[in-house]
Image (cartoon, rainbow, N blue to C red; front, side):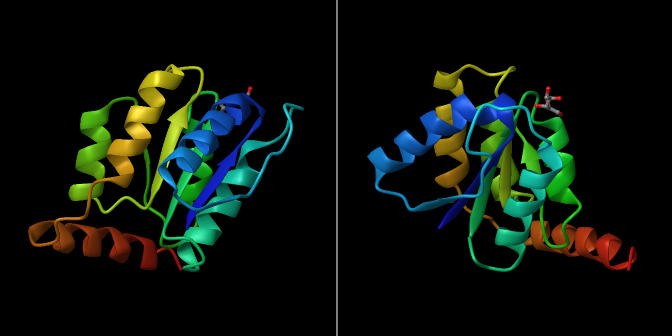
Length: 147
Ligand code: RB5
């Protein structure tokens, strides 16, 4: 299950992503926002972050105008590794090396064609483990130090 979330700036792209996931036969849950009315991105970044961190969803995709604010919000949730990607190379490497569990997109930065390629690249790559697992464990240690 893929968790989806956006603010008003990401609403139209989220609709395109949902259609794309439907075409691919992939299940998702939409955590809002549900209209183009102006709203606050931290609410939706947190909602998707909590869905992923709790295990309710395996991965998340979040979208705002730049992708920055909503990724900051998701990354405040313990266990979330949200990666803002504007290219396919980053989307591939953040799954393989960082075990990113949330993809953030900027709807005012990337066009829908590229955004869907980035989504596919993110979903179709796996964490490589090995030396990268040690580094992800170090990220988790930093997080634990905040408690
Ligand atoms: C909303 O205008 C905009 O600030 C938001 O979508 C996002 O870009 C914030 O980081």
